[in-house]
Amino acid sequence: MPTVIACMDDLMFLSKIVEASKALDVPLRSLKSVEKIIAACGEAPGTLVFLDLDDRRLDAIVIARAIRAATPPVDVLVYAFVSHVNEDRIELAGKDLFDKVFSRGQFVRSLPELLAPEAPAAR
Image (cartoon, one colour):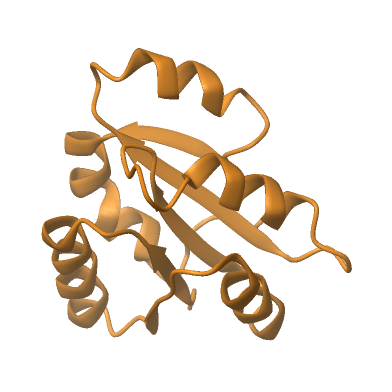
């Protein structure tokens, strides 16, 4: 079963993640500092990290770069969601930084699958 770390200021989306994780009995932590996120990723291999690319205060790209550069490396999947009209952020996200970037609607629909015990292993 995955452990989930959610890093976002959007309480509406955080509540959607909380509800989905409770329904599937998946451990969830809401963290807002890079250091705490990386430490938590190191504690539980196969962790899922959910980041909001639209968040202006908690820069998902900076956080994802720090996770990818962690020493020692962490076994984690990093997923982001973004408004489909925020093309600049989607382009900045690049191809190798996130395991997948979802539109906000796709992310909500995909939560049960992402949180399922048989979810894909980290890279």
